[in-house]
Length: 635
Image (cartoon, rainbow, N blue to C red):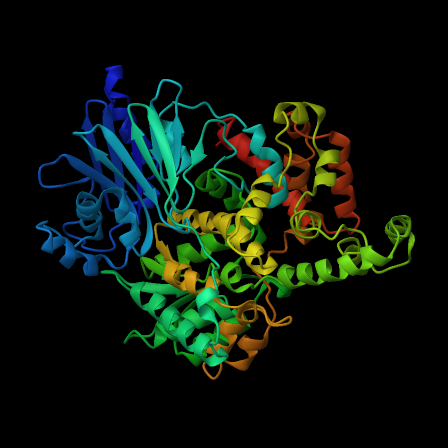
């Protein structure tokens, strides 16, 4: 795992890359690669690299050149099938001087050009400069496990990096809010498309390649997730389960490729437990497992992680994070994230990464199972709401539905029941927009109407639909099945944000994380399965649960999904209320003019009085902390 960066000026500009600028960009990424650094500068082109040595420790240094030094590569990631590709490349007359996957990528590009990306099985973001053609080629892996950000200036100057802060170090972009992305962030935890919260900085989307020639870029999608099921008729459940199990085992096995110690994050949920089970059968020594929790009982799942650790005789390690440690580290972790931290669990992930870094350099993690196997409860809820909603709206007059909706707040109901009814088909139109996107948003459309100031709405200039990208993806999914369409959207959006959390928090601790569930062959197979192999009634991840029968303890197989609970809502009402006062309610925060002060005060007051608005307050607090760190340059 590494950090990469670069500057390319148009050859016609006559500009020369300043090596000192390139070094500043590179070295702000030191945490991503503390083992070695490298630099390439030639006239209008420069590439930088920080290395975390995982494979071929002695001869895998970067930037790396081809034999005639016309091509040079910087690369972040792991291509697990690189040894399989070497023989074909050698048969084409290409000579190898190392055993690194970096050289395999470079030789594959020599042999196949941009089509080389179809050959790779793994996670990657790499850039190859062709000095003869004066062209830059950049590729990002299919699911977006590895990040890549860029800025194209008006004069054709191009800057890129593994993290946004590297581009900022070049001085090419002044930190400023991208108002067109604000509504997306407020609703969906993070931005959903190529925009970031920084004006002028974009991310190369997963499964895409970028070509730069003389100041002009072209971007092309080279992979997409297909839900085609035409050739799958007649398979039995047992056949689906058997084939899925073998693909999953292979996905774990190939991610054990390393010349350094490996371990895994073990939460005690079915995803990480399944990885622990398979991994334990593939290695000789006890698997090193790492768990994190909080002291609060509702945020502590150690009992399940310990059960799995005992079952598979792992070398188990734990850490408990205190609220004081949590909030003390938060500003620094926002710096690592570059944008507001979407999920409080990111902070816990950093602490368990630090724990793991004392023992290993590589960990396997369970991200991706929920989006490929329908693991979130919202899928079943939405499908039920849509089905009942069409019936309900078909027989109950509109005026009666409105009376029912207005009456819910006046009924003497438990707050949880009232909330559930307001999220149901009783009060929402039976559309995917209302019952899925808006229903599970942090700040819904109506909430944003109240929250955003007139100035913000004006700056947004018509870009205020927080679900525009999601709706586009939903409509373009290659399936007519509603569940498939929801999984497609979440794979492209929500999962991407989780992967950036995983990458940046583990990289902050200088360890590499690998995600077996996101092996693209496993993902493609999972997408091709019938709905019932993923979501059967209210049973989520059906194929995974059946594959792990008689392997995992029954307590793990049958427990409901918890996510990773972090009790920030309770903390915001208690001893850490002062953080809300400082970062949400203070004059300094409100004077930025993004939000209506009365709406913010009302939200805080309602949370203090017992309503649960932890996600919303977390989003506002992080947004302010982020602006202070990057816009105000406050350390």
